Length: 194
Image 1 (tube, one colour):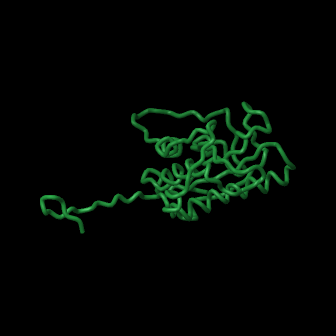
Image 2 (tube, helix red, strand yellow; image 1 turned 120 degrees about the vertical axis):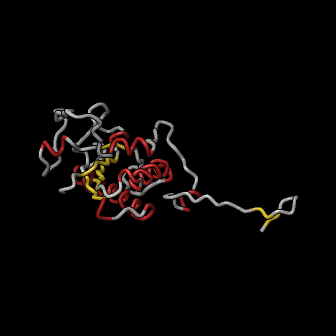
Image 3 (tube, rainbow, N blue to C red; image 1 turned 90 degrees about the vertical axis):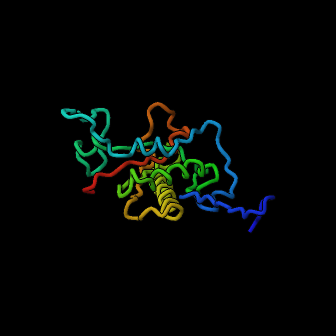
């Protein structure tokens, strides 16, 4: 217990940061200057179910996207998703310190009240470097590494998170096939029926 100069007791206040593990607070975070971290609010905005504010509003299905295997075009049209740059070492599914900045924001978003109870697909993608079989396996392992992190560090219920790997089958057309940007993790909200 501490006392101030007037002889009054000083009460210490401890701020608890929800969702950030003590390990994460003590580790240095190295960032890639070309990598931009998407904040938790932006992630929530991309994944949360939109609330209609007016009557008579109609939404047309998007025609520039294709459904996931097993999804109908109608259910996919309502999909909410975001691509995140979560860097991994080349040819590895090991999470790095450089990934911490984005994972902290993702964990905070998925633990937020706006997304409580929602289910998500974590999809790993690779560049076109390497064999298709290796890339498929690696992308699945990367998605599983992110899923395990979210369960461990943010106590996200395991049944809320599904991990999928797509290898190099869904390359971003605006980047070269072997670009680092192709190595990404996509988070998408899953319809309640899945």
